[in-house]
Length: 434
Image 1 (spheres, rainbow, N blue to C red):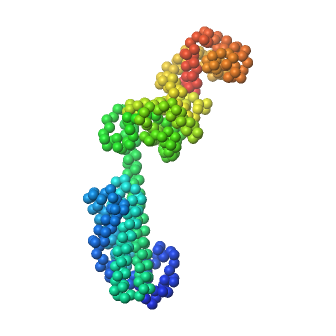
Image 2 (image 1 turned 30 degrees about the vertical axis):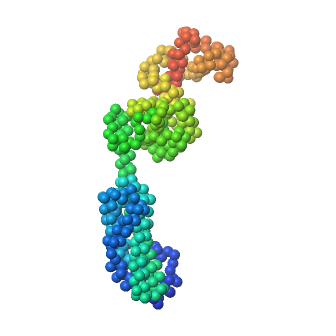
Image 3 (image 1 turned 120 degrees about the vertical axis):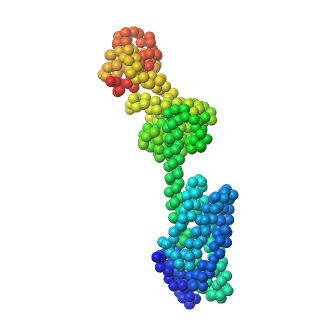
């Protein structure tokens, strides 16, 4: 038990006050108030003080719950237990390590469940114990005047009362804060788990959402969705990135979903379809942030919720197959054709073999040069343009294209679309061929 020094007398008060240290509030040694003050505190009208504190708490910290009978009853029970324990603690009949509380912890859990901020609970304790201190101090001061207690002793008693009230407040507030934090963490995890379960269900099928489900999801399924999948970023890091995303895109509808421990999907929803400039701003932000990402196109409604996620995942699959030369941020618009065709990888592989032939698909340096030259010619549309892009002489390009035509069995100007698609697919399939 905390040691209590004998109650001060008028004669010893001055010397004791000279020895007061700044750390007295948290000292293991507590000064006891005089017997007359102990008797007075024990005779305190608990019920009257409780009602004062309840009213003060409701006005200062919980005005929105002043008409909630269940809440007010729990608040009153908490205050009553605290006033009763404080009274016996001040009178020296109870030490802090003997304080056992039930109702204040129940109230703290209720506050967390109602979503009230911890700051409201802290304000409640400051106001409540302030009212208790004023009430008890006034009683002691009045009785000291009636008893004609000396000014020095009366001041010291008032000081000791202040120390004891603050010690009790600090002790109890610390305990209930732990309860509040523990309950808030449990509720938060429960909400997140429910939210993730809803997302998984939405991605699997066209589920019918109840009003409660919509509240838990906290995201508008009727929005125009765009998904950013971050393959190398866990949820906590993605949550920090989301702050910048919101600021850049001015999007308020957002949803994070941990696909795996190090892979997070982010839904960004707008009431209208994303404009090209808004999409470009998003890509620019992700690129500047130095992250790896797959970005979907815009898809509306509940079906779009699933489709936008599927697009972003398909973009990342294309990026993985592309390899080290792939842009860090790749959009569905850039690789929509690859995403479509890679849905049937075996069929795409057969298409590439049919269009390019064995010689052009060979895993050799010579075949790579021919494919590179053919891609440049298809992109620029001329020998001169291809030569300029590759830094080669025009004759070198011409000679390579002649060899390409020999392997293809037709002029490079024929089947241009099929040839270009085959080249783009080959880039993705070269490392995954069976």
